[in-house]
Length: 195
Image (cartoon, rainbow, N blue to C red):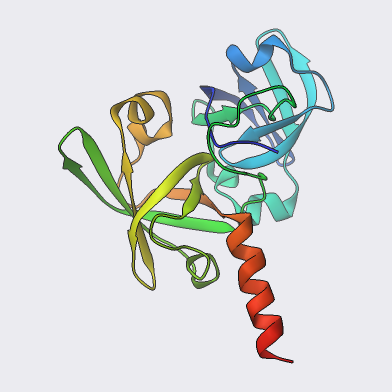
């Protein structure tokens, strides 16, 4: 389990048909082979470590459902280690189970923040509510507002500087994970409606 508080932005050093190599520093302090790591919001397993880099496998389902298949050497990625039992819970429950990809529709400066508007698949939008949680490329965020097909988040300067948000452009694909509680509530209401 993760919290959506990105620890660092790593860099892809190798891309293959079956995985990625990623250079990092902060997360390298205590990860080992077989550990989970959140890469752009996707929970992956560390399969190899060499120096200041680690490798993860990406299966076809991961490449279909996420933006990881579009990465190349040099691409930046958000990284977070799993929450420790004795750690602080700073974001929201992020499983690293990406529900789908969305795209950046607009980026608008507002005061000391930037408003990012995203288009998202209907299945994800059904779980998004104003002031609810959403994970975008693994970053825990609060929804400012939403329509049937879009949602907006406000990005503070710290998040802009310490995550992939600094490099996002209109049209870029992002990984989306809806709040797990919203998914269970939606599923429960659908089951009740069919009884």
